[in-house]
Length: 99
Image 1: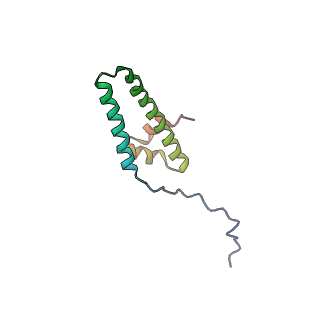
Image 2: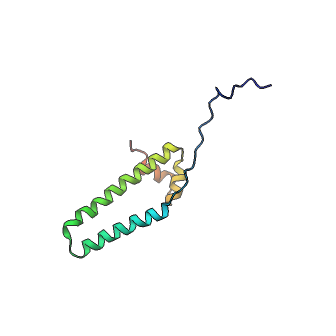
Image 3: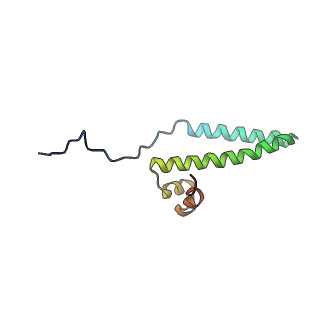
């Protein structure tokens, strides 16, 4: 007979994989918007060039937040690096020092 009270014993934290909901479509939409912005600048809208370049900084910040969120969710540097086509060390060097 077991004396462990399962209601009082903490369950080990397990990583739950979130279902991908329309990620491919959402990413395709974002790519189309960015491409359209680039075409607009290319047609002579020089004032919008600064905004287009700022998108790069926004994207870098979003990637950093996503990586840190995945780490907090329990993903390893090796798993993250593999998805990005880089080594574990490269992923950790790139995003490991962010708060």
